[in-house]
Length: 547
Ligand code: 9MR
View (cartoon, rainbow, N blue to C red):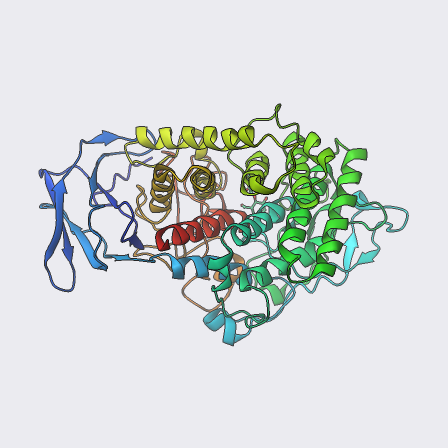
């Protein structure tokens, strides 16, 4: 299919921090220098030489980098190169990601199940309540003596996973954890972060209120009889393009499994720590839930999720539980200080990997590193730090080799590649938190630049942000409502060559295979797990530039 080499100057369309690195990509042109122009005064405020042209294997067309990091005066600017159209207008500001960070969190509010979104909070995207989930059926795969098939439980609240209306524990768990980690790592930032949600003004940070909407749901997914956790709560098949209030198909909880149960244990152990200062009763409920889930997983260590024949919603199936065991053990260890949990991590035997819904090792190391100062003597702190920095060093190296100056490699262009980019950035931030070395934050900034426009598709992938954001995300409320603009603050899945939806893409190249169309659920859906590391990273960069 066609190549779509961009002839635009490509850059982060939202903007840059006064103190941060600033890079644009220049397409082939007969010029050797660039300038930066203040759009209000017309004055040239910076200039420089265009670097060497290089090809990125994942995109068509060559690019060269233009570095204007020295520009540290707040303002609105364009990059100008003779022979090319000016770049999009961008800002330089001390704190350029504050509104983005808030909107990316607010997206969770917009994806709440079991509640109406009132106009005072939701503005144009107000909607009626849907999915009360107070009468959810037990699927035969989840039946037990106390809860026979087709009997009913109550499992309200939580966030819709994505553009569909399912609630899936594994994916919900990593998303919830990531928001809890943002709170745990940047308490001052989130103490001040007001989201205009119904709970705003109460005694806990808004980000915690939002996160608890989902923790409350997750708690209902545990079978009180044995501690096991159901894999998901969905209809039997995906419903059509309708608003939440318009769909009334029966919803089921489906099969308990080891991945869901361990994921739940990890999240509840972490939530218990974060909630403790505000509500110790609730915190101990969470910790007990975590411990009974851990016990169930110990007795049922190898129960993979198998999609029943009559169920066709998301699978999130995973058959390797070693990472989930390590993560749950790590969170329980941090929260309880019990050395038996540290031994269960098997720290010497496991490596580190960029996290995703089926891979949670990075979350275990991230939590351990964040708590390194308060762990018991059993913990090998040097090993914990080495696992974090080793992974981050490979991420930095890949970015340095890249024509785009962005650490995305071939295996990263999968379904949800933009989420991969943000999880890579989140791992870089962990290494910075340990070492204080700025190169990690510079590499994280480059990945944020990538999702906000420094990429060959010319899109800024967050709805409502940048000059060319997605307008047709695969998100039922965004397509079914009467509002032209999609719900804001969502990160589109992003480019990859899989094209499993069979839509007409402009290119087959990994970094260009993206389509801003409802049709493209493989490249243009949104999910809670892709937004979560974007929350973490924008908050981390904000905190970094403000200090
Ligand atoms: O993010 C998931 C991706 O890794 C898988 O390849 C894909 C196909 O199984 O499913 C994605 O998850 C979807 C989930 O199953 C249902 N809700 C929407 C998710 C994003 O498309």
